Image (cartoon, rainbow, N blue to C red; front, top):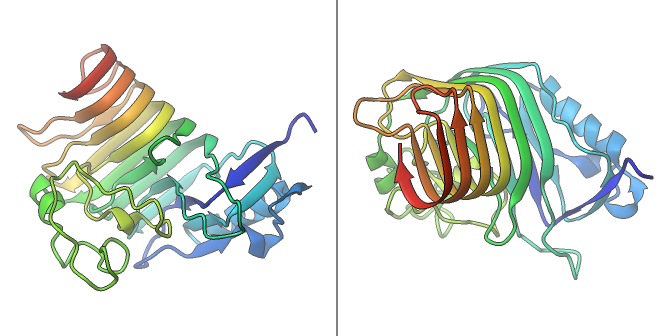
Length: 287
C-alpha cells in the first residue's frame, strides 16, 4: 500500500481547541474502530475521531499505544473557535509506554493545519507543539491562522505558577500538590503524563510554545491579545528548521517577540515586527 504508513505511538494527542469547558473532551481513536495492530488500515477510524472532535466544537484526538496503519493525517481546517478554555492547537508526542510490553516511542509527523480563526483563548497555555528529548515532532505546517488570546499575564506568572492558574491535577509533581515555582523558560518535560495542555503549567509564551521539533513552517499566522500580555509571542526550544513567513505578532513594549533556545536553521521573512532573519545556529537569542 504505497500511500499508507505506520504510525507507532507510545501516546499521541492532537487537540483542536475546546471551547466553554475546563478540559477538552477526549476522542479515543480505538472507540471509533482503530485496531492499532500494524495490519488493519485505521485511516477511516482516525478520520471519524477527528470529525467527532470538530463536531463537538473541539477536543483531544487520542491515540493509545500501538502501531497504526494509515495515510498522512491532515487535521480538519476551516475552523472558527471562540471562548477557548484550553490550548487552541496542541500537538504532543509523549512517552507513557504503559502497554503493551515492548511498546516503543512513536512518531508525530506530517501534520498540516490551515484556515483557523480563534478568539478569546485561555492565556495560560498558548498553542503547543512539542516532542520529547531525542524524539522530535516533525514536518508541521501551519498556515492562514489567526489566534487572539485573552492576555493579561507576565513572565512572573510563568515563574511563580500561581495556585489559581496552574493545574494541581495535571501539572503538579503529585496530584493535588502545588505546582512549584521555576525559571519561566524551564518548562518541565512531563513525558510520562497523560497529554493535556495544562500539564506544562503557565507557559512563557502567550502565542506558541514549540519544543523538540524539526521542520516547522508558519505561513500567514497571526497572534495577538485582548489585554496586554508581557510574555513573548513565541518560544522555540530545541528546534531545527523553523521557517516563519508573513507571521504577525502583537507585543508589549520592552518584551521580545520571540525567544530562541538551542535553535538551528531559523528563518523569518516578511514578519511583523521581526526583521528578515536567517540564523544557522544559536543557543539563546531574543528578538
